[in-house]
Length: 83
Image (cartoon, rainbow, N blue to C red):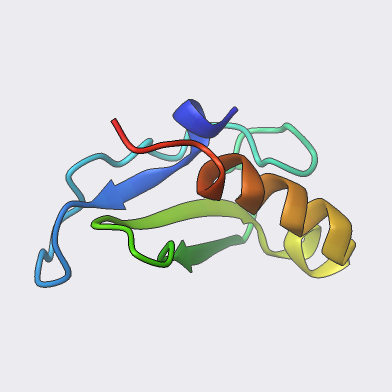
């Protein structure tokens, strides 16, 4: 899933993402299109990483998710080597 839901900025000063997966991607929690609902954007910066990442989820799904579910999704990115 990490290749489909995560967008990123190549450099901290970038205003536009290098890659933006758009709004037709699935919410990582309910697997329905993110565009169908109130959206929350979550930003991640891996320690020692060169890219700043983000993903989008339905706000209600993110707020109701367990910390284990959030960790599992974010770890799928953090634990994947940069290409």
